[in-house]
Length: 125
Image (cartoon, rainbow, N blue to C red; front, side):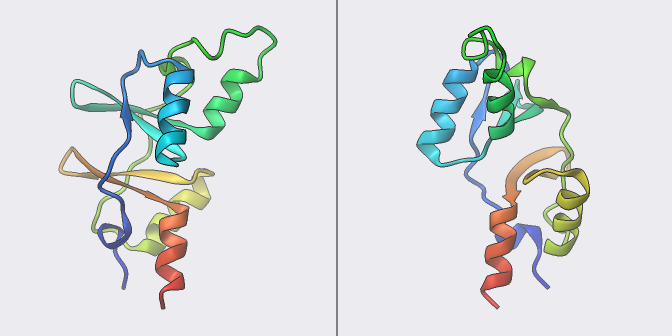
């Protein structure tokens, strides 16, 4: 049985809530990441994703690029334990309609798991 801890990434891409959409997008592109965790003072405040970038840039005014990720992120994202199974993580993602889950252990951010991570774990079998 594959656990989240077996497939999650411990290399986290984090940004401050005041990071601009453009700044976060550049960091995400450089790391080939579909999301950035929004962290302030060591606490996860939200998750900022590719979909959030599209929402920010889809307005008629060109204000999205310079606005803060805090305006577009998903606040208080759903998280999962590293001891959850890959199947449980997949269920959470499918039911919630998202592709990344922050991994928390005892109120501490320890990683992130994506649909791609889970697909790779299934592919290895």
